[in-house]
Length: 544
Image 1 (cartoon, rainbow, N blue to C red):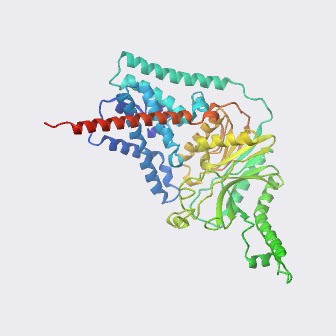
Image 2: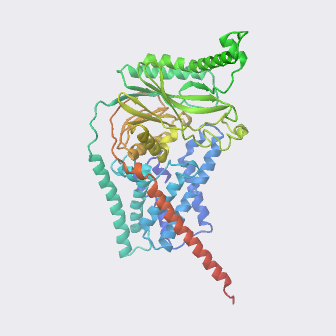
C-alpha cells in the first residue's frame, strides 16, 4: 500500500493493493499466533513509511511521527475485523462488505481526534479526473469506496475461496456497476457547461523557498520579506493582476491588537505621548491610553501598507497576530491570519485560522495549563478563529483558508455553506500554506492532492500560495491547471474561471459515510453481544 502513495506514487496499483487484506477478509480463519497484532504491525509500518515527513520539522516531532503511525496502524485490523464480520457472520457479498468497512474506517480516521485524511485510498486517483467527479456527492471517501469496490471485485475472481456462480455474479456485477457508474457520472459532470462570466480572476501566487525551523531568528524577517518582494516584483513584470497572494506567515512582523480594557504601562504612554499634564483627569488618561494603543497597532500595518502600494493591487498575505487581553490565561492570544489589503494598503478584512493543528499549533488543555508548552518545542499555541471571511475583489467573492484546512473536508464545506448563507457563495478559495517544514518531501504531494478533492467537493476553484511548494491553480473539476516547482521559488500566475455548480456534498456532507459507520458499528456490536451470549451458555453447560 505504501507504493501507491507519494513518493513512489504508483497510483494505478491502488486497484490491486488491497488484495492481500481482502484475502484475509474472505479466509475462513486468520492464521498465525497473533494475527491481529501482525495486522497492526503491518499498518504501523505502512504509516511510518507513508508519513515519514512528519519527523522533519524538529527532532521532537519524531515522537509524534511514531505515535501517530501507531494510532493509524489500528485501522487496518479494524477494517479486516469489520469486513470479516459482514462477510462471515452476516453473509454479505464481499464487494458491499469491503466498501462498507473501508468507508467506515476512513471516515472515523478522518474525524476522530481532529482527523487525519492524508493517504486515503481515493486520493491515489486524483489524476483520473473523470473518476473523482463523484467526490461532489460522496466526498473523497466516496472515491475510496469506488476503488475498494473495484479491488473487491478482482478479489472475488482471484482470492475469494467462497466464489461460486451466484456469489461471483453478485460481486463482479456490483463492482462493475459501481466503477462504471462513477465513471459515467464523472463524464456527465465534465460535459456540463460552466458559467461563462468573463473576465477571469488573474492571481499571482508568490512561491518562495525558505525552509522553516522551530526556532526564532529575529533577523529572518527582513530576509524573508526581501525574498518574497523580489519574486512578487518579478511576477508583476509580466503584467498587472487582480490579486497578489503570499503564503502563510511569510510576513514575519505580526499584527497587534490591544484590548481596550488592558491598561498600557504608564512609562510607555509617557514615552509616546510625553509627560502627563498636571491637571490630567480620568478622561484625559483614557484618551492618552487609546491613542497609544492605536499607534502601536497602526505601526504594524504601516510597513504592510508600503508594500501594498508598491504592488498597486489587492494583496492577501499570511501573517501572525497577537491580541493582548487579560481574558487569556497568559495575557496573550495568538492567531494565524490571512490579511486582505487594498492597493492603498488599507485592511479589507482578516481571516483567523479556525482549525489549528493539534500538537502542531496547539496543545490540548494548554490554554488552562500554559506550563504544558514548556514540555514541547512550541513557544505558545494558536487560538482558533471564529468566522470564515470572503472579500470582493474585481467582482469575485474571494474566500481564504490556511494550510491544513484544505485537508478537512467538512471544514471547507462549512466555510462555503456559512459564506453562502451570509453574503453569497465564494467564487474561489485561496489557500495560504507554509510547507517549508517538510523540506520538499512527499508531504507536498499529499497536501496538494487534498486541495484537488476539496475543489471537486464544493465545485469551487482553489488556488494555493505555498512556501517551498506546491503553489497551484485547481478548477472546480479538480484539474490541475498550474503548479509551482518543488522547493524552489517561482511566481505562479493563475487565470481562474468560475464554477459554482450545485454539489450534493454541500447538502449532505459526510452523512452517507457516517451511515456506513453506524451500520458497521451496529452490526459489530450485535456480533460481540451474540458472541458473549454464546460464551455464557457454553460456560453454564454441564461438563463431562
